[in-house]
Image (cartoon, rainbow, N blue to C red; front, top):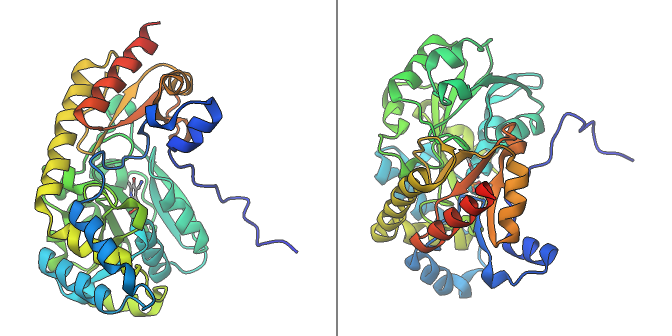
Length: 357
Ligand code: PMP
């Protein structure tokens, strides 16, 4: 037998890992620096790590109380009701729930090109069709309502990413509002703020108090540093928030994820350090890398290096793993995750050697 026709589906291509590269090139993993997946260079919040250890003896139970406590904490943080917080297995899981709640077979979604691959993947899993709106390199990947609306054709969901992966550009909240205002009542605008903590702008969650057509995605994978636990959430409008009960996979976030998430939420120091390091690294990379870079509001910088694949491979041989952006449709570019001061400086120095050799 065969699965259903998956020919329009594409596999997710994650940034390359240290072990994988070390084995392939016969290098010592200890000498490799991974700046290819926008992970937190400071590791997890120490409070989250301690919470995982403390919770270890109770992982035989389903995560009921911990999920309720985390939901309450997030609801308080964002001044929404608990029902509006849709916990999930990473931001990716929250995208699945939004697609599940919204899409009928054959419904269309509108996604950015270049952009984060999982919007289209999730839509297709849920029997949706995918259309694209471009972000133009010639406009420095500027995100405007007009740029989206020009390509809008009644889609059920529009995915906006702010800050945008892999370019780092943001969409101002008034542009988000224009997109929501100018589209059909039954079009949901999803604002993906996976990198929201790193940007100096308000969250689109503030828009939810007086509208029912915007949902916002957030994650614990980046600024909170617990990507390995897979914890994210959507914040949705109150009027249809109860749909979660009908679409979520039971116990959508694990016991360890919920406990760690709660602890990480209370660790302002770790988030502030992570955000400050990213801000420093963005500036360092853009000032010192001998390549064109784009202003970024995330914890990464996009750079034009001519041949992204060749530069990525050459840097890898020197122990620096960055992201070749060919899979984003930007073969001339690499994306460099902001590291610590030490690893960022090493990455820039290696990349400059590669670029000038
Ligand atoms: N949105 C964007 C734009 C991302 O880059 C990512 C992670 N790479 C996610 C969502 C999902 O992150 P996670 O599932 O780890 O929460």
